[in-house]
Length: 292
Image 1: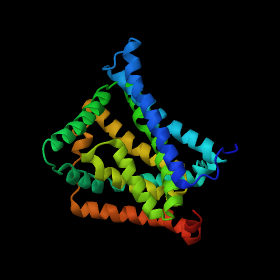
Image 2 (image 1 turned 90 degrees about the vertical axis):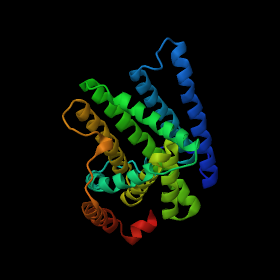
Image 3 (image 1 turned 90 degrees about the horizontal axis):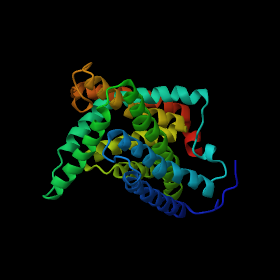
């Protein structure tokens, strides 16, 4: 525990400072792409791009969180809800099951979002941004070695799960809640910001939905463990599925998951809602919810 430098700063001041730290670290991360070629590295080599991706995550999300805690919070572990008690792990398992049950519904939302159309040349530009991001992911996944799988799980699943959840749920959502004094608005705005930060219009809505799920899990679970596990599962599932697909073990890529149909999707959503109610809502209760 340490003594915060500006413990009495207002929520909007904290958010402005966080934005400034984010932009500053984003510029630093962008500078890496200039430094690497000057130092003799190949900026187009997949493994180099993978490590740049990792460093960018750490700089743009984790460093601002550390500075935010240093400036504004006396007890960072308590504020960020980094509780590693047994109850959190049980809730994490339930949260991961909820996330898996919601996959068919999110897949339907993704298909609808991908069907959006805009006036030219805007649509072509947006499609190219989305395709470029997809090609980058596929280049990372092209390495079918066990070493490549481990690296992808660490850099694409573990690092973003920790960095993004600390940043968006741990800091942004909690600060917005103090500012708006409304939990639901804070969760919604954070989910939108979370999706916008990824910069893909044709994946905007499913990321907002995922952001809402993560937001409510954090609010009612009151533990960063729950969110990191869910975020990790979401990313790691894609990594493992690409690995199995590229190795010829399964016959479909993550983007071509067979449809479950409307009835099964509705049943899965009901099951997810029921599990969420039993595991999170009933355990929180009105008093705990108000206190949080």
